[in-house]
Length: 318
Image (cartoon, rainbow, N blue to C red; front, side):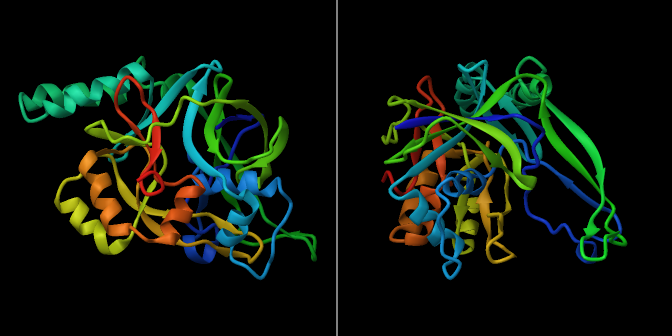
């Protein structure tokens, strides 16, 4: 097991779904970076370092060949090279919380039906309290205005004025993933995210982060959990998602074929699910090699909401 730190060296553009094209978006074109990169962005970074590929094959087949037997777990944010911060989501509210705050959640969730107004206040306090939500002290944005050039005519393209909100940080932070398998990687500099922003990669051995047992009652999604559309209604009706958000996510842009990758329904990172969610998911998506492949590149990473906070996959570890 390897721990990989991804240290941004400049503001980032971590794009999500949506077209960056005036014919689709209208006259006002804008983009805003995600705070946590999607797994396909990180897997693409690691695959790109192999400098191999076949244009006749689809992006996922190429990426799996580049990564070999690797499985990617993550993503966490690391502060001061030692303190992990976890994503937490309730609808459109988003927070980065430390281990102590995360471990309080089962008590809130189990008592949410008793003295509802009190427990609701406790939950909202996590998102709006500057001491509990580390987002306030870590995250900053840089707003920029850009243009698009017609390189053949050497003129600015009409209607291609756009605004972009880049992600930057008030402190030195790292994105952290864990890699299981035979990955030969040393410290290096690489392009990361949209527009090829620069990041530094550091690698160290780490062997105490995985736990494949299902001993917790609640689990936190550390990366989006991709769900087939034909089972999402059953999961929502049985209230297996305690808090968080379900949305469509794009798996990125296939540069080699100049087209978007697929869009799928997902429980977003930072959502909290019940243990029964994992059981139902395993039964409904078993024997799906496609969803197992998505897991290998980083999707469907969950961790227990307990003092251990160890990670596992849903399908691959079942």
